[in-house]
Length: 154
Image (cartoon, rainbow, N blue to C red):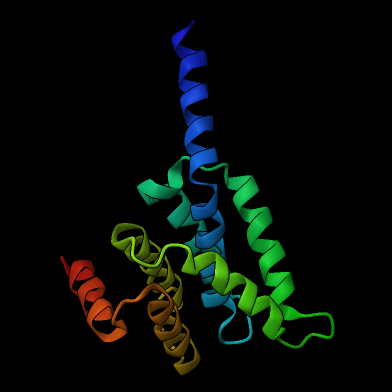
């Protein structure tokens, strides 16, 4: 078997094994980006940056990830332009799968932090969403926020 074919096979297996993580990551992106009622251009750039630079997300096809993200944002907007609580509950389920998995939970929350801080203004609704995500994953939001901020400063 050629090394190129083997490499493609390994990548596909990783994608399949981590499919739930991709959906959780895109749910985190959608929830945090839309938590203030809009998705800014800076937040979209932050999502692209995360996909390109966070090791746990690099194996995924960017186009597929963006399709999932767009679907989730559409669901959050709801049919009449209002937020759909049912959609939020579904996205929270995708994230809660990683409760108890500290490394993946921390990665998901780093993505959330990146998006929340993208426009350099942290809205109280974004802070509330971050706290909700931490709660879903069984982590303390204030402590984790401070850890992420400290790591950013290095």
